[in-house]
Length: 505
Image (cartoon, rainbow, N blue to C red; front, side, top):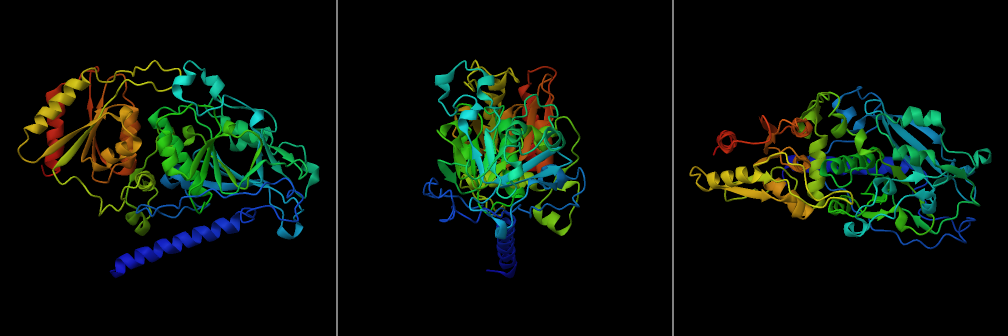
């Protein structure tokens, strides 16, 4: 092993060790894996069998996550995760020497002025499913056709979540936070129904005698509420928000996830289970469940991926190595880091110098828009963004088969009917990704550094989603803007030909 590789491995080991130290030193209750034998809870706290957790993979684009109060306002680091710098403690932990027999919970939030959002976490939190009004969730789509969205989104009655207070009995029976706190750190913004605000607003304080749990979850757990859960773009925002929340709170391993919503199953759950350690729906618990460490994940609407659609986020993708050597407030490697996280979760290599590319030419991935049943209120037909998509695809395939300079493989990206792992594989193997504006193009988050993006944009859908993602990842991006929704195949092929010439083909 050469000295450069050894230094990299030693650096990664040091970062991992530091993360573990900071986590266990800053989460005072988590290292108590079960109630003390002398605790008054021991008589009704059942034996706990720890759930298995997945380690974080080594990611080449990883840079340390810190709550650095000097992170500049609206810098790239602030937008993409490291801006949660203002800490507030609605419930501070009791010092070890003053702990009562029943222990005591703790709760704190990290607020980002840039994103106007908070990541909150706490210990000794109880969820009472019967106090959450929503459908069960996790059903087969076919069994809930026609169910209304209002039934699937949670309404939290007071005490839907509870937290144990140990020493300060004067707080027992109060709400954990008041409306002033919610307005300051969990503002509604333009969200009509801010479910995470509702969850935190429902938390009631109880003493040890009321804190009765039928089940304990010892390992860190993300509480996630989703809205447009069947849309790939919006689900990427939820994945990213969950990943950022895990890193900001310094979790030593990949957490478990509990969906605090009543949505049915979708194909996208394959990625949730790959990215995190386990997945459960809140209503799948039949009785109160207690979390040793729960993290409340901000809504996907509060990420840079979504905020960038309405406000200017002047950031550009760069390598982690470049930013390590020369930090730049206008550059980020966070989306590349997250893309590597997705590929690693599905077992694909992430070392940019050892990613196997097809040996028999260049892959041109055409991401298609297909009709499919997305959710209970969906008719099964997608909106047409390119009325002659099949004609364009056939023309590209015919042109590629007659290309003499190098071999071109045109991949039919029928993502709606492909397992998620195969979708990620197709993205990783692509030299060029082409498609009409649509949520499937969000997969370019997982593209490798030299992948080129060509988006076909109809006049009705001139939105910056994928141009922004490409810019934030540092990918080469091209667009063909249409007067309507018809693309002239020779124009598309000419653009493709120019791109491939630049790739040496």
